[in-house]
Amino acid sequence: MRPRPRPPNAPLDHGGPTDWEYDEFPGSALDASIWQRFEEIASRYPDRPAIRDSTNSYTYAALEAETRRIGAGIAAAHRNAGPVAILSSNEARYAVLLLSVLRAGRIALLLDANHPFERNRKIMAHARTTLVVTTRAHGAQAQRLASPSSILNVDELGGDAVETQPSTTATDAPACIIYTSGSTGAPKGVVQSHRGVLHDVLQSVNTSHIGVSDTVAVFYSPAVIAGFRTLLSGLLSGAAMEVLPPLAHGPAMLAQQIEALGVTVLRLSPSLFRHVAAARRGSLFTHVRLVSLGGDRVDWSDFDLFETVCRRDAKFYVHLGATECWTLQSQWCVDASVRDSASLLPVGYSLPQRHVDVLDADGHETPVGEIGEIVVSSRYVSLGYWNEPELTRDAFSTDANDPSIRVYKTGDLARRRADGLLEYVGRKDQQVKLHGYRVEPNEVEAALKDCPGLRDAAIVVRKNEAGLPIALIGYATREAGQTNLLPRHMLAMLNGRLPPHMMPARIVLLDEFPWLPNFKIDRQRLAAMDAAMALDASQQSNPLIERLIDLFEEITKTSGATPEDSILSLGGDSLQTMEAALQIGAEFDVVIEQDGYQSARSIADWGREIADKQRTRLLEPAT
Image (cartoon, rainbow, N blue to C red):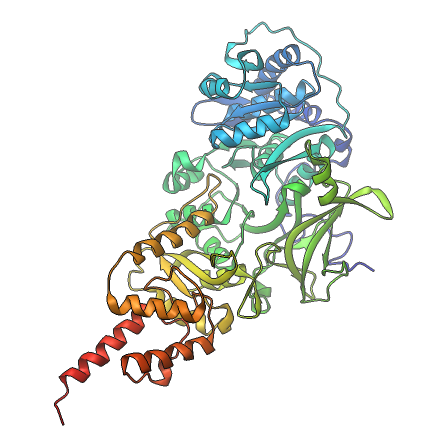
């Protein structure tokens, strides 16, 4: 029997903002299209602000009117069943273009004009799009992506577009496609129906009580699932949306705007939250009632930060989701009372109508406390990958007892606690084996982030020339004023929290992390930085260090070592550390004390000790 993580009739807002008034998103809305739901909301709140950015502002009535005009133009220009690409940046007009495509009864292919051109080109080619809808601001990029006859610039549409009736769209028909990065490096188009999108919005609205009393910040474009969910959760419930692109504003300006605009709901990545909260330290966000974090690991240190910048009655939500599920599979309003029994901040309970199993390699439910893969079963899982039938069959299946339920193996590893909460451990494809042990880099990263004085931290896996993992390398940024906090202090703190096989071989301090457009840490660039540091160090000349590098490489059977490397960072263990110490003692005629046999000790540290011992011996009087 499947375990029940909490009572089956527990509401979505379990532990959440139950005292915040809103209009419940009804289940009956799932039987209509996205456009029909928006039309209903626009007629209910015509004069309320709908969405604005630094340039444009729309009431619900104005947004509907503009959508009608452009939707008619799309219907006239595009008559086949293929997707219509939307090329826009994160701006208020993205909402106009999205709703216009849906009103015309077409499938919306969501692009971000700020994403690399080559990525957008590949997506367009793969989706076989025959029309690009854009604005004058992005016209030049559109012309590089498509022929002039395939581009509809809405700024060139006349105001006298022939009014048409909205297309009748089946609620189970495809509505939107969002491309996400695949493990092969090629983006995959995840497609969802109107019903699936609306079910996602229903869960979002009824969890957070989004409604006409809210002002919701939109940090990301709808071309990523978090931006899409945030936008529609607000526009389909009557909230006011404030578009605040992080790269255009910067953390300090974002923090000012959140307060000045009276934003009540923040939905953002943990990394962006840390930046914004750091910029707000010393002052509270007086209007923010709810902070919802997801898209990357959330740690207890984030909860602590939340408590320093938000009022006491504010709620802190954490969730776990996947684009393929087109929504969240677990969430909760964080209860600090579980902290003593949870080293990792849990990602919540499974949601109603989104059943979560935690399965072992044989497909059996794992016992409480043991790690397994999250598998989601629901009628509202995405329809699959656009133009990829084989890939869809590999990733999705149907429930043996109910063909209407789709099953998706997420690749996320988790363990279920006795109280039903899920603890996210890491990705199935990120788990590594070091020194004979299976290690989850995310667990090490969580421990590093928990070190006092750090603003943020990340772990990357160093690999050898054969592509096999050999060490964990930590990167960290310090809080303002923490100039005396050094890597050795962090290693000392971790030494009391992690077993030896999970210890980072090296910690590198950075002034700032490299960021992706969605404000997640760019781990590929961190790995490239690790390789670049190795190259720079290899160009330095020091005969003693060069000999030690040769010796360490011989012992660990690796290459490319630097003075900052250690036996541990090169993939070695305690036995190889002892072998190195014995060889060093014999070759350089020095005595290495027992407490010097440390696997994480760098080649540079060994070199300094050898040089000091040799210098001391030369200064000793002859006997």
